[in-house]
Length: 460
Image (cartoon, rainbow, N blue to C red; front, side, top):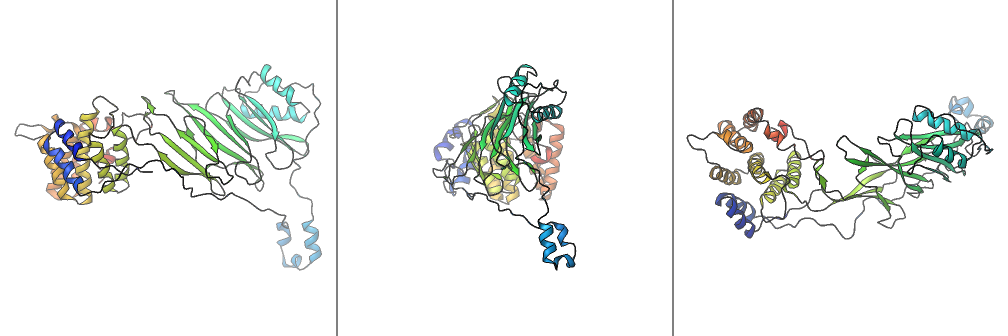
């Protein structure tokens, strides 16, 4: 969600004057004089949840489609009753093999799928869970400190506990398998293989959304080539109609720490709370902190609330403003560009040369924004500040200025000639082609920051 904007104050402008020049501060004063003061959004005390209804489903036996083939069958009630009473093809999930013990697991296979088949076969032949844990730990050597076996929860709703096994598979990737009883044998009903070697962390095993079926919540850890590690969390439940386990999360839940489950809105349905507690690194760039809350809407868990803490770096305001501009919201974008220029804001620069580079970029962006919105009077104030800060004399080469200043002059030149955004942008694109730092300086903020293209910098 986009935060509301705290406008620069007069003291801010005076401080800013001492660092640059009168015209830039006059620009901020003029633009903000007639604007209302709106504070940055803070985290609300009471969270209004848009989705609070627990899901429920009703099921019952319907006649087989075969009885609907002809009107002749429908006209005979005896035929209908006979057909409806046919034995159901549904497998008997309550029939589990008797444990006998004294069995040995097969040699560890080469793939996770074959390994799960071997575990299912072992249980089908009567292997005990105690012996299985011992052999996974000592013979296959795949449990380690993070693997586990759970057999205390009925996930399919048939009255018999199912078996959950998590381990490091034969290809050094984490594996989680769910095994259920079906007609006297164990079947591997669900399998997930992670991108990292650690088995998925079991976060929850029970009825999460009060729909009468137990759910399994797990978080799988994976690390990229920059050694940035992140969890992917899924909610898995048994779907009777389809006869298989399905994921109840809308999209992907990714986080740097394992989410927590809390009933925040007191509706007896747990919400998935993702703490955004990573401030960023040289690999990721600056990250916004806060929380994301996924709530149950009756059919899936979906991102319901985003609460972000105020930004800590000016580039974060710039990124947010650029996103607003890309959504064709120039007025809101201009407010954020001005806030990023405000020296009274307690915001840092991610790089040592960030002040010079971002100030030039913000002047260019304000000219582009006011040109798009048609606010030419305010744009003229920005142009005056640009010309006083970076004056062009007879012997001046604009290429000696920061690249975004040359882009600003190129845009103004194209606009003056044609009063056309597209023609003005074509001159900007020529500058970008000759000075690739226009892209490089914006794309140096890490893997989690926006990655710019030429069209992002002048999209008309």
